[in-house]
Amino acid sequence: MSKPQSETGWSTLTLSVVSCLCYWAALPPCNLGPLAWLAPLGWLWLVRRPSLAGKKPYRTLWCTALLFWVVLLYGVTLAHPANYVGLAVLAAYLACYCPLFVGLARVAYWRWGWPLCLVAPVVWVGLELARGHVATGFSVALLAHTQMKWLGLLQIADVFGAYGVSFLIVFFAAAVSSVLQLSSEPAGKPVSRVVWRRYLPIAIGLLLLVGSLWYGEWRLGQQLPDSMHRRTLRVGLVQGAVDTRFDVESDYFWDAFESYRELNRKLAQRDQELDLVVWPESAFEGGLPELRYDSRTRVPGLSATVSAERLKQWDASFQEKLKLVALEAGAGRVGEGPLLLVGTGTRDLRLGQERVFNSALLVNQQGRIVGRYAKMHPVLFGEYVPLGDVFPSLYGLFPIGPGLSSGTVAVAMQVADFILAPSICFETTVPHLLRKQANQLAASQMRADVLVNLTNDGWFYGSTILDLHFNCGVFRAIENRSPLLIAANTGLSGFIDGNGRVRKQGHRRREDLLVAEVAPDGRTSYYQEVLGDWPAGVCLGLTLLMALTGSWQSVRRESTLPMVPETRRESRSL
Image (spheres, rainbow, N blue to C red):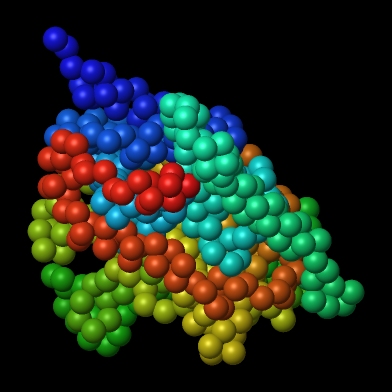
């Protein structure tokens, strides 16, 4: 006699595939956001199943999630074949969160007797927070990021972060799941009890949704502080279309720099009133990074005299490049030209050691560096390899060189009367990092008026990684109630206001020149200044407690878990 479908694992496969498909379709390129509200249903069905015996169901969950992440993040492989290794490792790691969600939720649902509407969002948000921190963090494609077209809903991110939106979606899905479960129960129970159990979860979900939308509409309709006398900053964003390539001739990097110089000149001709011009990450380097050295620095194999001369020549060439571009940015203007904010590599040879930083330099009209920010959060497999410091040979597997050193502090850059807070590349995907930087600057009486992100997304050849990255920027703008400017090589450059509205956006994999008139938002962000990740942290703490209470091994081995008393089943169904 064959086993029931629920025990063979076939239903596990079907349910997980459906959930993964809905989740994927809710993200770019499809952007079918409403499907995200249904995506958790398949996994929640598995949470409610009395029996999920052995390792096979969890292996099935991991395999389907692995396929989901491989398809979603395929764009990371386009720049170099070695990146397939990085994708495989990254996807294998991210896929673990799917069986963890089902397994840990089952602990609280069956062993603790908690209602599904509480269990599911708590575990989901706890795991999303963990994903944002483990291995330096990867907060791309959160469930909240599926709702980009519903701007009113996103406004609760300035209280709870993106995790609040994810919590609401999973709560609602759990309510629907509970209703579906109860609709299939046999008749015979008191009508009042059935009605109460069937509709209370949906009622609570609707109440949370309506409350969130009311708050969102209130925030969107607010008059900003000093709106009648708001000063503005006029910023030009330079977007080139240079795909990242490896194993190329040295002329490739110089040609990329020259293409940005040409765009810089076009922007100067088009707009004579700019206060600031922003180039993307690495666009200024051109094969000649910034060099920092001191009297003890020596070039290996050269005498002290020759070494000092070589270092001076290098530095002089870089300074000449700065002056040239600054002059071109202000060409044809009466008075001083705009400041420049450019991305470049920095080789720091001071203190007898070599460190390489990914830097953003603020350059004045005379070509002098007046501000410098070093990237604090290197990209996994793009700029560093786990355990690479212990086993340097690991870097030989990837075309990224010896890896980057990390900056340690947030930097405030002043342009006119504005304070800018720069970030580089995927730092906008890390919510707690930008919040920490904003709070550091506020504590030093340098509250940021504008967030600026310099990024080189030429690694991804116009794939949906560009959209996933840009969506993170929308949430960072709302969470910090601060406008965000993005200068992105190959796109997507843009201007996002403090409400998360996309005011300007560049085209995909095309040259673009965007001009943004930016004003400070001025409103308080409860997420940034008060709560931070504490609500999500409580969810993570409870999730860890679930892991300790019912060990992962016992969850995998379970056959039929003991049922909780009937009185607790009533509340657990919510």
